[in-house]
Length: 233
Image (cartoon, rainbow, N blue to C red):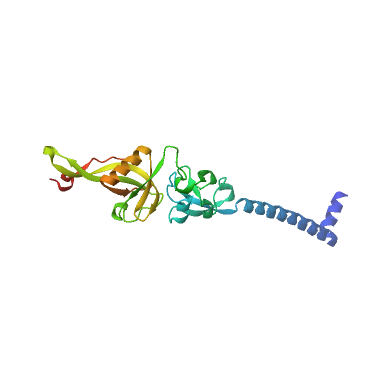
């Protein structure tokens, strides 16, 4: 009996139509399942533009410097699942902020990396000071130094040599000092209380020059540079 019914189902017009309807229903269900899965996968892989450090951003760098300086960050696409918590998607969010930690090259900028800046002094520790020293354009690397730059501080002066003869010298006073601000020929450096006094003394009695540092650098301390080392005399 079952064989007869099956035979009629496949050979009669009504049976063929019924099978066609069943196949269409199964195909529609399969299509709906596929589309639902596809929508979920697309939603999960939605691309989001996030601010990423284009080079090392050092602790203490003002957010306003980061968002207005070319080459400090870039907007990069990430799938939604790869975006870190609190990731910054708009440079304007950095206004009035200061980096509270070093941010490595390629690292996403997040809200946790920044704190609120209070004037120029934002981001200073309890033992930090800001000291202003007047410089000419050549001494400040022909105006290439900006807020957030890191510099070495050199002092040129005279020293008493053999036989009481004075001679000019150049001496490395400090390495890797952060520039907090710059206005005209006045450069504001972040220093300790003792360093502040030394900078004030050198600015008053000697001549100060700044050497712009790379974002990542070692600290080999060169010797005092005398006339003999320069001229070979």
